Amino acid sequence: MYQSLGGRKIHYSIEGSGPPIIFVHGWGGTIQSLTPLANLFSHHTRVLLDLPGFGKSDPPEKNWGVEEYAKCISELLLKLNIKQTTYVGHSFGGSLGIYLASTSPAFINKLILCSSSYKRTGITSNARTSWIKKLPLPPLLLLALRKAAYRILYPGSDALKFPHVEENLRRVLSQDLSLHLANIHAPTLIIWGKQDIDTPLNLAEELHQKIANSKLILFDDATHGLPLKNPRGVYKEIVKFI
Figure 1 (cartoon, rainbow, N blue to C red):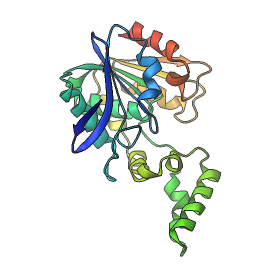
Figure 2: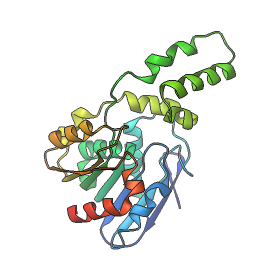
Figure 3: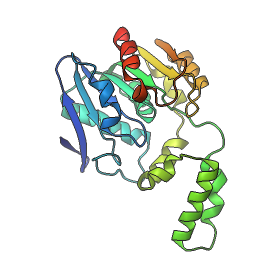
Figure 4: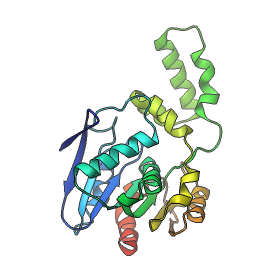
């Protein structure tokens, strides 16, 4: 199914009946990413979407960041006449949940953050590779050189995998949501893998410390893809929480 939001088509699905839960995938994901997890909630209305630029949804404007992506989610909920929902966000989807719970608290009654990014740590990719853009080379050669540098410095970089939303990724990575954490009052479940190197464990501990009404659950052998690789384990923790 599709909804027209802000002049662009957004691909989404809504199934089931009962209290609503929205599942929001991470950067580069699609509806399919969290469908195995969502399908376990048979007594709930389950909403999933392709974020703009991914799956079957239209691309965003190049200046979109966290605020604009979050607004897209709130507009979809309004279109579906969902006034309040449990929100499950993985990685970047969790970033959007943090922003929504802080700035539009009426939408979210329970917040579940799975391996959720909310600030960038370390040296940015721009700082390490900006010199490449200054070289007097043809565009295609510059692109090839930049990809080679990224492969060395950042193997698996999302900027390389999804070049059509590269500018959006750069904006997202420049945004620090730390100041929003104290404004979250919805009961919050933080689910993390101890072996996550994309969003390290200290970020989970900081979330737990700064979100007043929060609970932290750790999976010993799990990595960043925890809700994708172990949906049933994540489901069991969410069910106990909600």
